[in-house]
Length: 122
Image 1 (cartoon, one colour):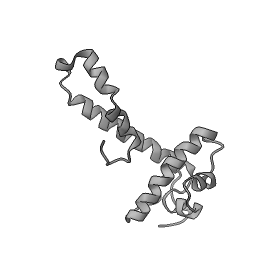
Image 2 (cartoon, rainbow, N blue to C red):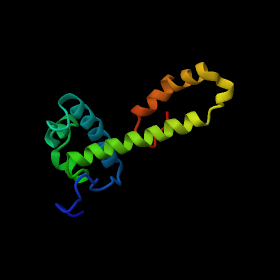
Image 3 (spheres, rainbow, N blue to C red):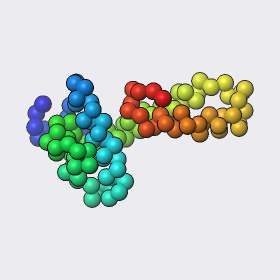
């Protein structure tokens, strides 16, 4: 891992150990909350690390800046949308009809997918 040479907005490294994965799984929701509360411009990596109850140095092991955090959240959202669409695409739409489709679309398990870490299914 080289310090200072990461392209802006790129994830610095992917956690390999469970402890690191758990840390990232605390950092990303904390970033979501901070961005939602104060906005992207006012958000700071220090504030995000504090919300995640981790040291800012730990945050920097994985994300060189808040842009990288935002991009990781964006990527996570895109992956979840693809998963949801794949699940919906597998439904027998002609048998469900519009009302059945809407019930499936809005079901608790479908919306729960957006709250889980990528790779974990509802």
